[in-house]
Length: 614
Image (cartoon, rainbow, N blue to C red; front, side, top):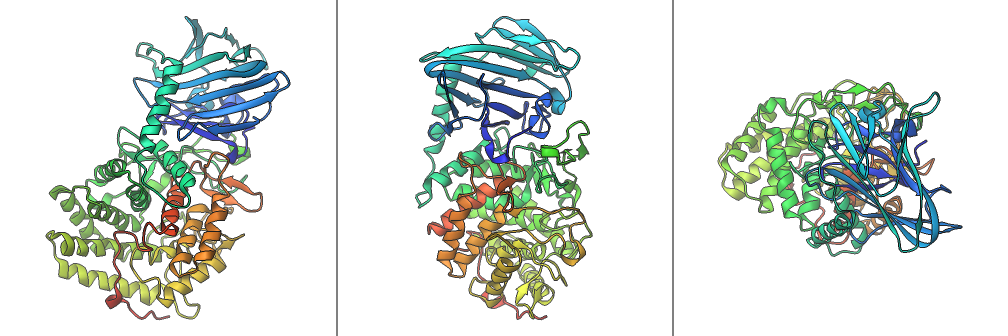
């Protein structure tokens, strides 16, 4: 069985990533990309679905582990009766092929070690043909080929009744000795790539990450947490296109044993603005520009066909299917590949896109006439469609509603167009856009605010709340000092609070808003939003206490998943989660005084505030 989600560390090569457990087992790895089929899928089943164990023969969880400096080189140590051993795990930044490098280092004594390599292509389903080659083994299955290069005498255990095929070996490592393993992947029709030199790969990987972290200019109170979050965010970047995946995994459940299991190995438009804020605010202009460029390519085309989520290269179609042979993490079924939410109508993404592109321009990232023409096309669609019900930020699979956050983001999109004309002198019908901005503002205040309870609601006429309402002042719709904002922050904290953290919404509100069975944990990004909001309404000490508690939910390597279950005290949902990490970075910047409560693209519209009616 896979370990707790928080037991996993991450290594990656900026094309894909692997999860390494405390027991020395790589239980998840998709090759050659984040969204490719997994070759190790024990995370969603058991060892028969593929894994790579490298650990002392005595087994068990490690004694300690850490990342080496500010890098993605994972060092895992075991103290055994025979001595101490350290394993260095890394994936060097992608060259000609994908490489996983594992170096066993003897620290003291003589430690008996074992390796068990179970390659299972196509999400733990296909057993490859394995043969012996010079310095190791080769495995082929359809389009995929993998080579293992090592001085250890490994042997293929052929399938027998009741026994799984695997590549096994036992060896002893003495103090001062290093024993390397290099696993290389390539397309099966291509020649075998030259294997990397393990020590050169280690040195080069450390140098790469040291150089990258040298560009970070965050200088606040939570330096270590922010820098590790940024490094992990970089690890979730698909370098060829600049796209940033929401997480490295699929189908880790939002409720242990439940059915809310989704594939997050894609790029969401909802993440655009907050990701740009995090990158621009910490010195990473190059990464911010690459993300902006990915955004422009992805959304190009018919503005009516904007998707909420795209593939790493901007692919629009991400068909969702269930994997029947995988039982799911701790039995949480089904395991899903792809994401049907890509076909939903979510009004907020037009606003998110326009907001993100405006933020990039304010930060000095050069734009073009073509980019402005694209934004105008998006605005034309928004002008005719803002009043339609949608599926909302949280991709509910129930009926479409008039979600308040969606309308607020429509307002933000139009507002950024007005600002583009006023600040940059771009061409456009600014008077018409000002009227449209006011019309949306009036509509939200008339239908999305409950004067009796003193709070905005999840959707028009709803009795439920939505943590996304905390973003109303962040985008400039109303000022932090407005009593409607203060009332909404207090209502969200009271009604969506779960052990001090924040749920996205109550799934059972209004008769079941999302059309799905089961429950979910506290949403970590929303909990960071609450910390921001508390600071915004001048409850700074409370905000800092919440932020400190959130930092305490990270695992020992500084990683966060999507959600946290206060009852079981475990991380849940896909991991590591970009949305959570971005929330950490931006809230740390806010509380450190390195950015205002309003983000760079927001303006305050005191003159347009409309008295809200019940």
